[in-house]
Length: 112
Picture: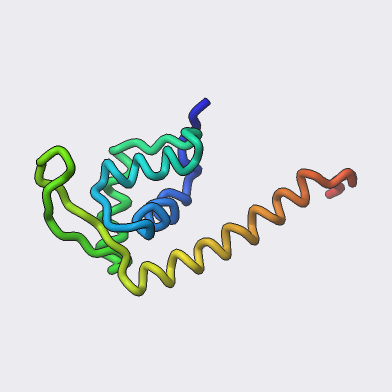
């Protein structure tokens, strides 16, 4: 069963996908989908604005090239700042998800 990407995670997932090597937008979507075991689905209408935001923040750089099906495509690669941001985002994500997992696995009653 596929799920949409959680709000606030798309840019981190795009950075991770691009960290695997230069890729055009459709390849970024495929990497996220395949890397999640086909659980996460990214909509084009969300991905391309996210890629533009990352480019505007100098976290990725883009250049035009030819895709595997001979079409002109913009290929994205991580910048040094993008690598730093990905490391930071991953650390924050792992910390947050570990805390949530601990709470959800806890047998203790939650009190206000």
